Length: 337
Image (tube, rainbow, N blue to C red):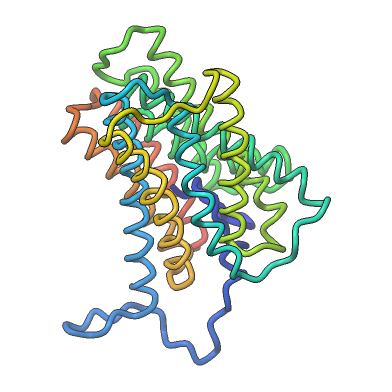
């Protein structure tokens, strides 16, 4: 999921313009990045990058789907699902981060690292809690599409960044979309109180990742993107595992082979692998192109939820989802002009 780009872009999966700036910049002799569409031509680095970003978005979109199947198969709770996802992904990304350049952590980073852990834990726990209560489509659209707009608002309030006309337009679209999506979500099996709690959790997950985005800016200038992702996952795993133990009395284990398979899948494929693929793609693709392509995540998650579980939005809820997607698109494209 993407975020806004002023002055440092961090998407709702925690990577930023400053992150990708850690990668070697293209030399002046780098070929024109415009994709060569001649039949049989070798894909350019820019096109290859966009394809990798698209693959990452599609992988991310399966996390909510896998969690819903897991909830149907076992009694495992959302906190435990989020904790296992981070516990499994953190060491895998950490191994890659060890080979990357960057300054060592010092006392200046401790505050930001604590915020990363708290907000990453909040995002995971609240998102999967929302999926368990209101389904994949509604939770994903609200959590992922609201996050970049909240980043823009918080950047204005906390960092004093200016909100330009396009950002203000995106905020208006997002607010209108959220009102429609929350007020008229469509047919849901849960009772009213459960739906309200699920929607609040989806909004809370969006806010958590917006704060995560701003905290990552504190570390981005001195650390490679792989390290930032590994730090976020590692700190989040510690916090969420501790919360899960405190709430549930322990970190529950999956009780069947299919449940274990889903937990391992969530930790490895739509988390560790997806982030690695995304960062590889961002080294090659344009920032704006990547921001637009990542819209595949909420769209794909909504389509899969409809195909697999029969989830659907009402007409007004669907219009709200479209407005939220439009808000993200406006933010993604605002630097074209």
